[in-house]
Structure formats: C-alpha cells, structure tokens
Length: 405
Image (cartoon, helix red, strand yellow):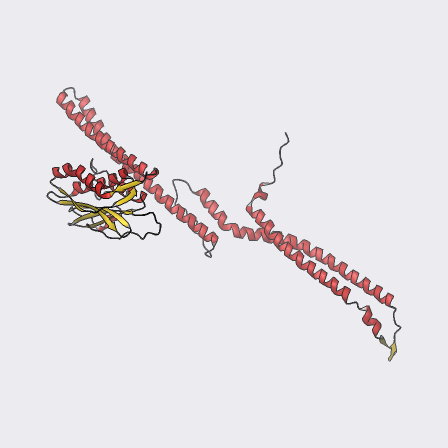
C-alpha cells in the first residue's frame, strides 16, 4: 500500500491558516486597487485621444528668432504615434503593477504571519500554562494583561477555572485527611485492645467480653462514618426521584422518631408551626436532612430545654426549621458549618458527631433547588432552616436571609 503523503506539521497550525487568510485579503485588496487603476487609465486613454486636438489647431515653433508654422501631420501619423505611446505606457504600467503585486504578496504573507502571531500570543500562553500545570500543583496562573477583549476574558475564565480546581483539590485533600483521621482512631482502638488482650495469658472471659464491647463500639463508629460518606456520595451523584412531599407529615414523623432520644436527655420536642405545606421533592432525602438537624439539636440542647420544629410558607418558598436552646454558635463558625467534617472543636470527634450531618443537609437542600441557613446567638440557641422552592421557576427570588421559629 502506498503511504499517503501528509503535509508538514507547521502547515496545519492555526497561525499558518490565519496568515494565509490575512495574506489573501490584503493581496486581493491590493490586486483590486491596481486593476482599477489600470482599467481607469486605459478607459481614459481610449475615450480622450490627443491626436484630434493636435489636428484642429496649427502647430508653431521659433526658428532663428522667427515664428514659423510647422507642417501639419496627417491623422494616421498622429494616431499611430499616440497608439504607440499609449501601448508603451500601459505595458510599462502592467510590468510595474505585476512587480508591485508580487512584492505585495510576499509582504502580505510576512505581515499575516506577524499579525497572526501577535493575535495568538495569548493562546500560546494559555497552552504553555496548561501544559505546565500538574494535578498536584495548580498554583500557576495566566494573569494575562492588556485590553479587556475576548482573549483576555478567555484567559481570566481559565484562571477562574484553575481557582475552582485548586479549591476542589484542597477540599479533596482535607476530606481524605479527615476521613483517614476518623477511621484511624477506631482502628487504633481495636488494634490496641486486641493486642493487649492477646498478649496477656491471664485474660479471662470477662476481659474478652470487655474487649469485644470496645471493638463493637469502634466498629459502630466506623460503620456510621461509612454510612454518612455513602449518603453524601449518593446525594451528590444520583438524580433524586421527585414526588409530592407533605412537609407537615414529615415533621411529625421525625419528631415521633426522636421522642425517646430526647426524653433520655430530658429534652422536650415540640412542633411549633406545622402548616399544610406540600413540595415536589424526595421523601427519604428530606427525611434524612430534617432528622440530622433534630439529632444535632437533641445532642447539643441542655437538659430541661425545648426544641421547636416546624414548617411553613414564606413568599414562594417553603421552609423546614429546627430551633434549639443550646449554647449557640459564634459568628466566625457560621459560614463553615455546612462544610464536610467541619467542627467547632476539632478534637471533639465522637461517634455521635462525625461532621457530616450538616453537609448532608445542605446538599439535600441544594439538590431540591433550595438552600440551608442558620441563625444563632451565643448563649441563646440556634435555628437551622431548610428552604425549598414551591415551583421550579428559575426567576424565583432568593429566600429571606434570616428566619426564626
């Protein structure tokens, strides 16, 4: 088989094609101008012959100080002379024109190559930065200077994308570190207690039972963490099934499920507001989000306090809210509360507080086109609210910034 001849690689570049385009336009414009000049001169010489003017008037000259009349030339002689002069003039003009067009063609190629290179210089910088960037180092930026044109906006968009990627990689590293920390602690507890029990030849049944209980509790913490991680992954990557959800019934169900846990801590659960509210959403996801808020409130609420739950409508938004009389949250922590694994006291990692509950609440709300917000005062308590749109209209105004039960 004969191999197909491929053109040189440099002829396939966009700079080469842009150079040809610029050169063609410039050469075409120059050729048009030269052609118009040549045609105009030819028409003028054809329509205004000089020999007719010469034949209409006598021709005089001065010889030896006297004015004499020259012999009149015949029309044929004058016409032939004029035609010869015109042909030589047009021939010389055509030679100069073709020479000028050749020089213009070469100059247009050079100009096109230079202009296209300057025009594509920002693209080359974007390519160089993209080639130098590694997945583990996203610190480089294009930082293109110059007028705010399309290429500048392209470079700025690329820089913004790098910022988002860098933030995503940072969060991923933090997420892996936090998960490793939460899994390493119970594994260390299991390994330490099992090794101590095995190394002691006097270990009796009671010691083995105590070790088994410790291992069970540690395994339970790891199970809870894995369940939270799986719930978060499903929430982020799965399309939720949509159905009509009665939020008042949802509140009543979650409150009923949490009554015993609240009673064990001497905390009262009350339904403060429960209007008839129905939204289009996923029943199980909303149940999990509200249950997470109630569980957090029960865990943090002081004894003999009251936790209020409720739902209602405000404008074009429905809301689910849980209000506690706990210690409250300082202002600098509020914007980070819904981040995965974020804890006000990082050392307080326990089975009941893995730092994923509020992240799931936020992701459930956003999956429904809504949001999750918190209002808190130190020493007074906190109110967590899930806002859900009543209709999918993209022009729905945002929910209120503040909300209390």
